[in-house]
Length: 387
Ligand code: APR
Ligand code: PHB
Image 1 (spheres, rainbow, N blue to C red):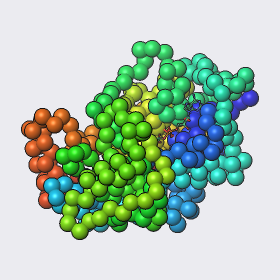
Image 2: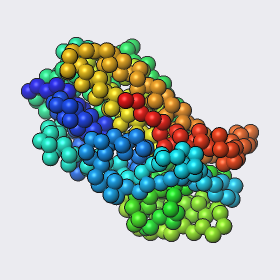
Image 3: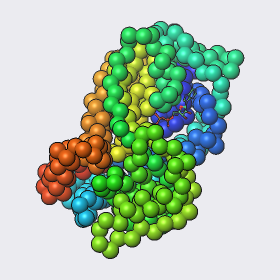
Image 4: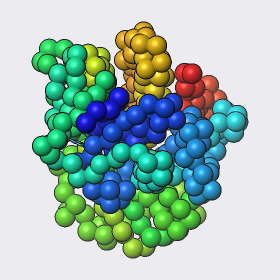
C-alpha cells in the first residue's frame, strides 16, 4: 500500500490534516488505534478560538458548529467574594470564542472524511514508524504502508515521538502539583458565561456544552482517583467554590461523565525529524486552564498543510524545513498563557502567603486595568493565525 501522507491518530490534529490535504488533492491514510465510537465519545475541552472556527468553516466542516456552538463574548473571573467580567467585545472587538465540545469537532471531521471517501482506519493494532529519516513507512496489523511523509498526530502517549532517534529532540516540561477533575452534568448552566473561580479551597471552572449540559472542573490533588469523588462530594465542592458571590446559586443535576486530567506543560523541539512531522499533543501539551490544546493542534495542522502542499506541488522543502520554527512561536505563547492562567487561579502551597498575595494583586490588576485585561482577552480568543 502507498499514500502520500501517512497519518497516525484520529484526534482533531490527524483528522483535520487529512481533510485539509484532501481539499488540496493530496492523499492520506489515517491509522487510529481506538474505535470510532471511543474517539467520538472522548470528552475533552470545548473552547474554540476565532481562528479555529474560521479554519473549520473555511474547510467546509463548520455547519453544525455554526448552528450549535455557543458564541461567548466574555468570561468571568471570580475571587475574593466578587465576580469580574472580562469583556471581549470591548477589549478585542470582533473576536470571540465558541463553546463546542472537542468530540463534536471530531465527529464532524470523521463524517466529512468518510463522506469524501477518505481512508480512516479505526482499531488498528501495533502501528510502528520505520525509517522516519528518509524513506518512511508504517506497519500495522501485519500490513505495510509506504508514505512520502508521516504525520505523527497520535497525542502525548503515541508512538511517533518515541520513534525519533535518541538525542535529536529536546523536551521542555513543567508539572503542576494538582490535577483537574472534570464532569459533564445534565443540567442547564447556572451562568451564561464561563466562570474561572479562585478560592482558598482551590480552583473551579464552570463551563457548558449546550443549554441542557454543563461542564465543570475542580482543582484536585495530583493523585486523586475518581472513586474518591462521589457525586455528592463533587457538587458540595463546586458549590463551596462557586457560590461565593451574592445571589449566585449553582443548579445541580445528574453527572453523566467524570474524569481526572493531569496538569502539565510539555514541548518538544524541533517538531520534526527527516520525513516525520509531529502535530498537536504529540509535540506539545498545555495545562487546560487556557483551553489552548485543540486550538494549537489546529494551528500546527494549518502550517503543515501549506508546507506539504508546496512540497507535493513542486518538490520544494523550504516550508517543510521551517515547519517546526513556524509552529513553535505560537506553541510557546500558548505555553506561557496557560502557565500564567494556571498560576493566577490555582491554590499552590498553603504556606506560601507571599505567592497568595501576588496572585491576588495580579487578579486585581487584570480586573481593573484595560491594558492587563486586554492581554488576557487577546490570548484567550487567540492571536491571529499566520497565512
Ligand atoms: N496508534 C494509533 N493511534 C494512536 C496511537 C497509536 N500508537 N497512540 C495514540 N493514538 C491516537 C489516540 O487514540 C487519539 O485518538 O491518536 C489520537 C490523538 O488524538 P488527541 O489525543 O486528541 O490529540 P490531537 O489530535 O493532537 O488533539 C489535541 O486534543 O488531546 C486533546 O487536549 C488535547 O485538546 C487537545 C487536542
Ligand atoms: C471546557 O469547557 O471543557 C473548558 C473550558 C475552558 C477551559 C478548559 C476547558 O479553560
